[in-house]
Image 1 (cartoon, rainbow, N blue to C red):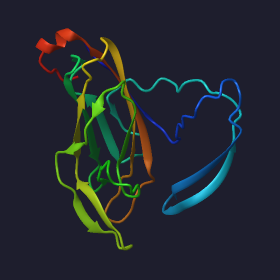
Image 2 (cartoon, one colour; image 1 turned 45 degrees about the vertical axis):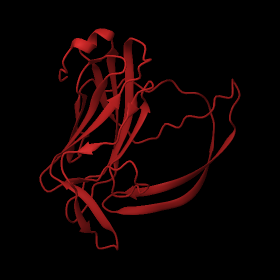
Image 3 (tube, rainbow, N blue to C red; image 1 turned 90 degrees about the vertical axis):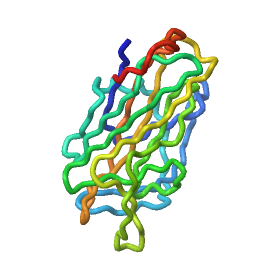
Image 4 (cartoon, helix red, strand yellow; image 1 turned 90 degrees about the horizontal axis):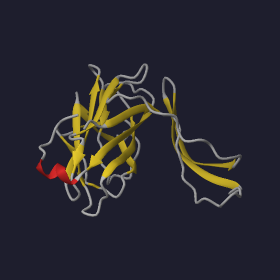
Length: 219
């Protein structure tokens, strides 16, 4: 059984709101924290904006059917995969993220417990079908450097791979099961940074009791 997987670039945020039936949720008040970048970056802190609901959209378009991805003009190639395509109820598998920056570039630390978002690699899982994901485990330690702005940055030198253990519930139903998420990242050299970017990934794996006797098989 082979899994379905996909990647795509994204520059927006999907926000889920309680569905108020057919009625509009009305005026929305939003606080924005982030940064706007071209050749340099300008921080945005606690910007208050108002939005008005105008209608429901269709689901996101189908993502690119490949497990490797490089956004146009980005300095980082990504490979995102599962370590197997079939798993038994109560079994374990891994989500594997690989970032390969161009020479002289690097990506920043991924730490799910760190509330800071600037100079970080970010990961969120948007669909896990009851599975339990553990903390990412990197194959190398970060390098720490003073950014010169009174902030210490932590980044990986060269390519880096994170492995994220996944526990499947004993009560998981058999059949095709989705796993979806998003990654935020920024690639930098020792003296300059590209704008922050994001990508979305989507997999489908199979839950089956017969997987108990099957060895792990890379995708």
